[in-house]
Length: 400
Image (tube, rainbow, N blue to C red; front, top):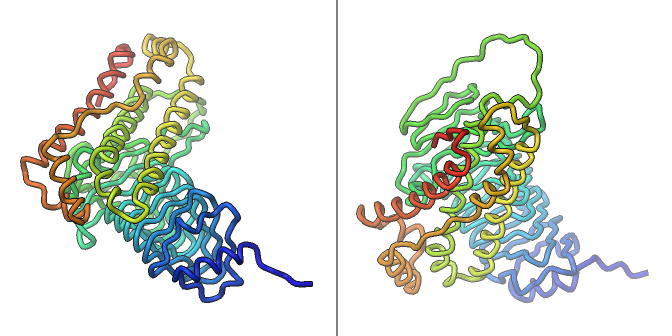
């Protein structure tokens, strides 16, 4: 009886393209994988790796499974991505992103250029802007993190950090913003530092340049930029549990609206500016499509969680009654908000991309006036979405 590993024909096709596969019989490739979406240039697939899904894209210079076997399922990998071992599904990794072994990357995740993590990192519904660095043994789901200007000046999360995103009520309206989109996309803001052996209880929002001391748990917003935060330990409490009380309901709703508004701004940035650079890259349109799918899925997840929360509320005051009554209209107001990018910016980025310039370099060279234009454009999108919702439920007295 002759035994033939599944997908051996696809492995052979990849080798013929130039992919390095040191031990071909140990690599498992599903039938629905399109080998035309896997580059033949400097790609290495180490023993034990599994590649699945018709939407999987692997660009030049990617290395999979250098430390332990790696499973990649319906992910889009830009150039030079290195995934040392673990599992990734429905995630987008832009140029130079990397993860150590033991990674567990679930759908709705976008790692932008050179974002990276060490070993045993769990991500889901997570957006990391360029250069953001995660240590080891981290659970960092349901959030967006920006900040930093380069690989030498980057936002960082210390080892053994947790974003607490699940409450005793089973509630997950807990997405947090570390930085923001209107300023974060410009890659000129001070990095954020979250010290190891700590955590954040979502939802919170922090300014750029925030430093949270190691071993502490952040439970409230850090509104101003450049703040050192050493949260005090909570006082001892013994009292009856009040399920689904949501005593800070207005704050929770405000944080969720702001998160969705920042997603609107990020989607506009991808569709109008990043698109120009993706169009010039190997498999760029496919990677852009994957990122847009993830942004759509992240928005759907946040709205789903918000709807679930409101479904648990009792109309015990005017604000709650109004929120319950107008929920469907509020959800409509949380649809994607868009606005045209500054025409000069579009022309500049289009010309630069057409000449082969790299996204990070072009953004880094924007003038002060152009940076103000970007922040005003994207900030206007955020403010419009916030205002639309605030007008829908005025009795909640939302604060942004």
